[in-house]
Length: 212
Image (cartoon, one colour):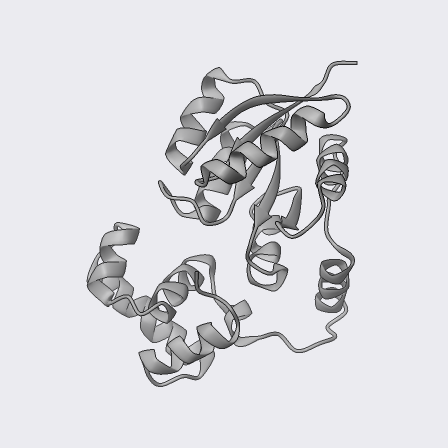
């Protein structure tokens, strides 16, 4: 049986090095390659066969969800396991909808990471018991959704940046869209989240840990 080929995508060299050591120590696994930004990841996979990509959420070179969607569209056989410092209630559901096979926060143990890799490689999904309960609650209509969960993916990206204190023009530059478009998104966000100012969004983002 051939080894599971793992590609690591994270912008922190220390994290990449640590993940590589875990992978190389895992039985039946092999390190396939690494990338420090989204564009480099997509280019590298053209020449680097991989079975599973460990994908960080906060990486330069492209928006996370769009990068994930592009990766899944171009490399349909490659499984994606998202690794993040962000709590599951921020990104996990959106990541799974965009094509990820699993979501794991970086405070999990190496054994849990290896278990997650094996599960997604076999075609399964990997979610924590907490996330599984959250997803079940959404399916049966139980539980109350936080206001930011009702935003579209692009609205969510804009909201996080507004919550970080960026201006409309700064967000427009970062997302490569017009300031007018950003303003339109902002108006929708204000309406959906029932807030009246950027200051309200900053407070909300800080309270829910949506920045950083």
